[in-house]
Amino acid sequence: MHLSPLLTALVAVALIITLAQILGQLADRFGQPRVLGDIVGGILLGPSLLGALQPQLSAWLFSPEVRSQLNLLGQLGLVLFMFLVGLELNPKLLQGRIPLASRITSVGVLLPLLLGLALAQLFEAWQPELLPGDHAVAGALFMGTAMAITAFPVLARILAERNLLGQPLGALAITAAALDDVVGWSLLAAVVAFSRSGSAIGAIPTLLGTALFAAGLLLATAPLRRLLERRHRRGEAPSQLLQTLVLSGALLSGVATELIGVHVIFGAFLWGLAMPRNEALHRWLALRLETVVLRLLLPLFFALSGLSTRIGSLNTPQLWLAAALVLAVAVGGKFLGTWAVARASGLPSDQAQALGWLMNTRGLTELVVLNVGLALGVITPQLFTMGVLMALITTAMAGPLLARLGYGRLSSPAELL
Image (cartoon, rainbow, N blue to C red; front, side):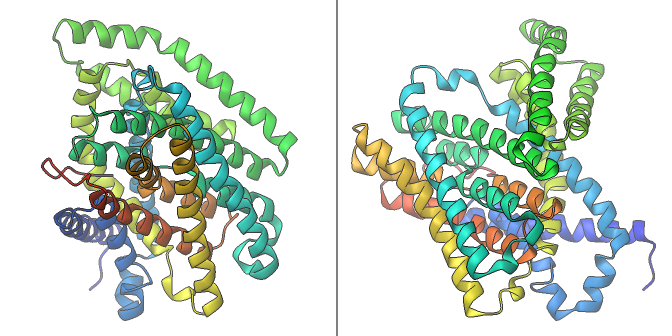
């Protein structure tokens, strides 16, 4: 069958979102985040399964022309998702819990970061093909960042479905995750700036430019924030023009940070942070975006990630041992760092363990880090594949481990990122 690239892309989109929905519902039935179904769907459509079983079908369905169109839509979904992530971060979450949460975040980020850097040094001596020769330092920094990140959206929704948000454990977890999110994205911005400039000194202008842009964004959006809040207090929904300004602002803010030298996702994230801190308004905006972003655009991002995931490339015992080390360092660093600080601060053993497993979730956030590193050429497809497997396992293990500690699902299943 001969179809134009546009029609083929439409067929690919229909297949991707249908498979993602089916696998997402299956994951939800087993008490897992829907994001697992999305990630697995992307892997199944990639060279790990479809490409291996039906190479001609895969080559037709995901030709370079089709992939370029899917990439545009997937990147649009990623930018809008990062806007939603910034929108969800509420400073009120930090009130009264900053001292303990900041200690948990500091150790929970620093320990896996250092372990990730150490693992990269081991790989450079033992499996040098995992880190490109000209980008070894940047690759090591990306690996450390990937180990340190926590998926704030996944964690928030896991807490919600277990009715933990109103309890001390949930309040502490969401506070620590919010701080971890800000630290993680800031760290990623610094690593991107370093990898693009090639040196720490060369990254300084980019980081200063990003900081100045963030400060200017807060000032420039003040009238928009006041207008949104005023309409909301009067019980009026934002006009179509205001809705357009909010969405256009997220896209243009991403363009600005890309031009500055970090990445397009950071501009969208900062735009979300700049919006009014009003939970009802956030829900209103999220409800109008989530269906399109989560069910249509993001599955395309996962599919493209799946096309870069080649499980068959891990074809030696040494590479599988390296993958096991990636998983062990990711789990050990995040869990042990969080658990140790929580126990030293007086939390009971079960709460400290639960907090450690919650902070260990990666989800989509991990894939964002990995895709940025792969696009910049600082990690190889093999290391990317190891990271995707790690993201799957660390996200999947949180639910069962929390249930064993007595924090099972109590509310109706929620759509998880």
